[in-house]
Image (tube, rainbow, N blue to C red; front, top):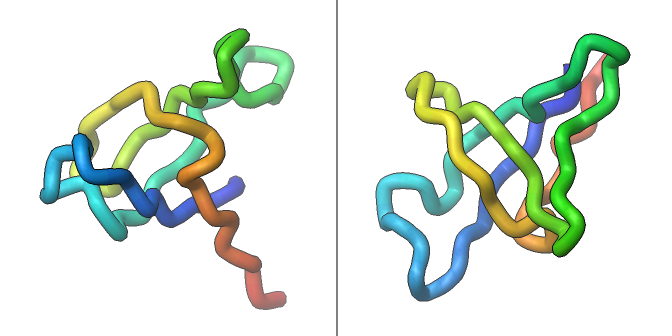
Length: 63
């Protein structure tokens, strides 16, 4: 599963900045993305939110 760090911007809830999140996926395995570049993610706290995709940084998975 792909993990991301959410950077946030000045309007972002401070509790979400720098938090780890997972992409919410459809049944076929694709990430749920909006037409404007937004992405549906679920944070480690269990909160689900639509965030700006440009502010997500992928975390490399060490094998």
